[in-house]
Every structure is written in structure tokens, then in C-alpha cells.
Image 1 (cartoon, rainbow, N blue to C red):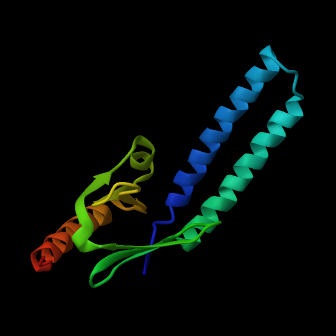
Image 2: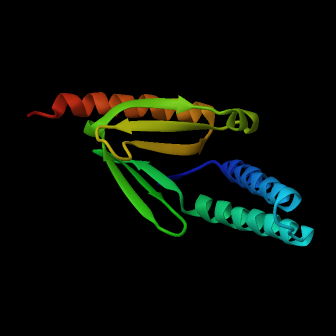
Length: 153
């Protein structure tokens, strides 16, 4: 099974720092305009959230795996709740490669696999080098086309 690029941990940690900072600003505004909160509580809360985010990013990177099997894309992920997902190629509708601004800055990309279905009908594989993401997108597209041809009703 293939793992994600190690730089994805940086992406996840940056996301955590941004989220913790937004919560810190909200706590500051509550302190300023509504209820008085000790500054040490706000700072300690921010530090705890960032440390938990770093631990989560490290654990998530260790667990996250994917594999192109004979008839399906298989994914293993989740820190608290482990999720094993098998996406049959015949269910793949289309595949995208995405690169947000932070991903571009650290040289990563994601592949999004859209499947037939209503709830949770897309799977994202984050933390790939851009060339690997393009290669994976093309391979998944080819496997979906091949499986469609062999799927007799």
C-alpha cells in the first residue's frame, strides 16, 4: 500500500494552527466585549489545540494508506475511528486533481474521486506530489473506463 508524502503533515499542522488561531481570536473578542477571560486561559487553550493538532497529523500520516487493487481503490485512514474504504472502479464517475494555495506553497496536490451515489460520494487522497497526483488521476480514469466496458447488465 502507498502512503502519503511526509509534507502532508505540515499541511495538516498549518490547518490546525489556522483553526486554533481563529478560535483564539474569537476567545479574545469574547474577552474584550462580553465575558472576561484570563489571557493565560486563551493562550493555554491555543497551545493545547496546536499540540493536539500536531499529534493528530503525525498519527494520521502513519495510518493513511491507499492501494490500486485489481477491481477497486482501497483506502485506510482515521486516527480515532479507522475507516477502510473500497471503491469499485465501476462506481467511479470522474477524477479531479486539486491544489489549493497552501498545497501549492508546499508542493503537494490531492486527487478527488467522485463516485456514483448520494451521501459521501467523493473520496479525497491528499498529500501527493503533483506528478504523482496526475499519474494517479490518469490511472484511475483508465481503470474506471476499463471496468465500465466489462460491466455487463
